[in-house]
Amino acid sequence: MRVTKFEHATLTLVQSGRTLVIDPGSYTTPLAELDDVVAIVLTHEHPDHWTPDHLDRLLKAFPGIPVFGPAGVVAAAAGYEVTQVDPGDTVEVEPFRLRFFGGRHAVIHESIPVIDNVGVLVNDEFYYPGDSYAVPESEVRVLAAPVGAPWLKIGEAMDFVLAVAPRQAFGTHDMTLSVVGKEMARTRLRWATEQGGGEFLVLEPGDSIDL
Image 1 (cartoon, helix red, strand yellow):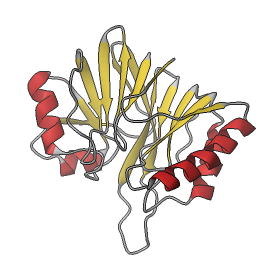
Image 2 (cartoon, rainbow, N blue to C red):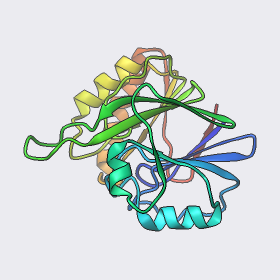
Image 3 (spheres, rainbow, N blue to C red):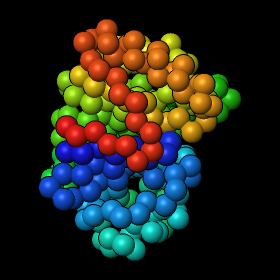
Image 4 (cartoon, rainbow, N blue to C red):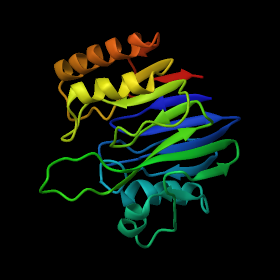
């Protein structure tokens, strides 16, 4: 399975020639040259994780593919056919097995309502938590760990990586950071990854890792 990082929070996973798209949002350039997209996962409703423009392009190119998201996405994306998924759910979209965890977005501020969010574990190997620190109930081979956000404190992100203890990790959710900020965050998460014997990778938009 090949995992590719795009700008900010967008990821694709390719296995057996089929593609899963996760969180195509407003900070991500249009996704091109995708092969046989079979599903889209939207972890939550914020526009940096999905936009109508991205969905329209993907659904035009691959009509009829399922879109999965929590209840908040179903409501926010009214007019699109979104299948609701909740923590504890498992969905099979050949060749991908999707398991969902968490349920709530990390707190930004007490004045801002907390929305729905699901983390997704793909084929029991790759995990992306969306905008949360939800730890999956499973060993994780590769973790995409958020490194910059209004809700993110780097110490909490480090604790999250320590709790997951992945064999490999890379930073994502990073378009709000400067070059210096990205390097600082990656250095901290590298330390956390290595405490569990894992390896931290630096992926720029378009870079991939093979599982």
